[in-house]
Length: 563
Image (cartoon, rainbow, N blue to C red):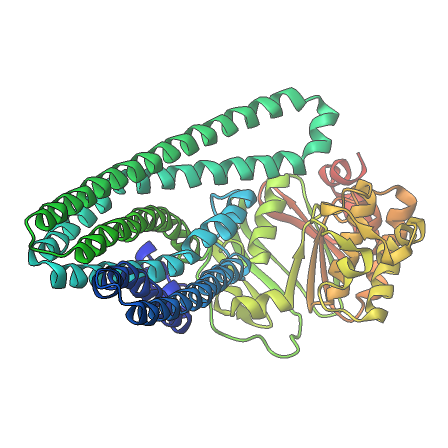
């Protein structure tokens, strides 16, 4: 999974991925900067060879040369900037795709300890900053080219001036790099706080209806206000660090250029350089302020990019939630699921099996026992002891993507997406007929009938335009439409009325007659249509029998399902 990824690795991969565009943009950018450096030199030549000698012909020739140089400048800037921006945007897009792929990878682990909003911030702002490194490389190469051409020109005009630039620029660049260190640290803190604020905001918006119902708006607002204030503080600190770095580097560059101009003026006064050479030297001194200031900007961008790259590396290199296997399930999977002596959390030596075509229900007195069983069946966690097997192969041995396609564990509170009702159900890849059958079996056809455009009605984000019972039925329809070899449902009817619940129980049972279905529930309607019920209490299997028999045998069972 790339556990060894670091921020530097991410930066290198980002530049290498766009090496051709970066190379093209760098060549054009270097040409642009070389042309910029040539302009004051040419102006000095015009003064010495045309203006000083009152030579109109020479003046026309050198003006034409200047015009050609300006055309090259315009071409290099336009197309170099375009290629550089393309490299930055495409690299950021590629990083976003890699981050999304890692977050959605069946092995999991990328979202551990991170709010969804924080992951979105990494995939947007951090990816943009790291992608911008490509443009920084282009600008850096262009700036170095301009600096080199300017230094060579100054050397030809005067050895002292050229040596000043060659010997003074490296320490200036080093100081700029050192001044950028605090910015890197503060930029990392800024992004962390901003990501956390985004995550908290997304979390609060998702639970807004619940917060209003319990009167928790003021507490939620206070929580977000504190988080947002922390983010603002970190942002202001990073902005101050960036302003300080830019100001210091600009001041150093200004002093440096002033010294160059002062030395050039003294040389001209002593007659060691001509008037045109003085004009060229002063023009070059002013030009050099651009590349040196550019390095200040590049240092700031690289400092922020390094911090963002480290955050991206943490997501891309996150260890999987469970070790992935490499055995592929049979195609198509048979669907025999066997739980052997499973121990995990509150569960102890739990065992049962479900054969293809069977409808097996599981009743757990303690909700924590149900949650532990579901984690093991979904392989979000491996058991402390015992095994879960699919068609005779232990789940840890199976490739995660193959396991996910064969065994689907559907939570009762699954989210819906912004899009049509039909798209939400068919998002798993089912065809039109599958969607219709899934809607009917889940009772979601009534939901479609109640919507203004039927299945074409666009749902709000998270399905918030539907009631709780409607969302639950659409989510169940989506799980049924997937038609996996083994479908595990967790309390799929907690938000519907008794009549609808009975209809759903019959519909799910009929639709899944040729496949394996396990329902973890206390719903009498679902338990009544099950082939048998596994009764869990105190972490162990107490009994396995049809629902009617368990009602007669166990008082705890009656309390759990009929109270």
